[in-house]
Image 1 (spheres, rainbow, N blue to C red):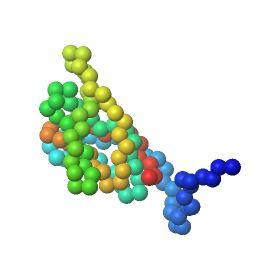
Image 2: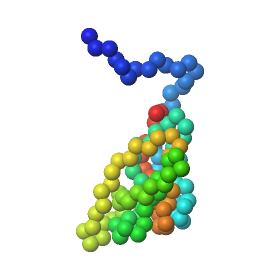
Image 3: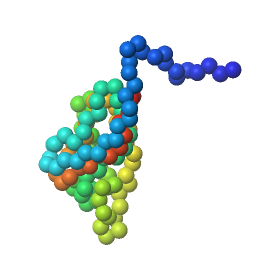
Length: 113
């Protein structure tokens, strides 16, 4: 018989929150679009509406480190150019910001971590 190794006992007083659909957008450089709340995680997409030319990005920040994220799920490809749109898993405290301009979109599900 196998023994489960990843089942943690319930924490006294902890309440389960329902999953929440997230759809957010913002413009203007350095504007916060979405921050994952404490005790939650986010699974979905973040995209700048003009990533295909390499000049615009969504910025992901965690632990004081900023990362440029190029993705294009929210943009109509021009001249048959496409950019992959990987599914992101973001943990509590991670922030999505507008990089250097244009519009950034965030779409996914927030759930208990």
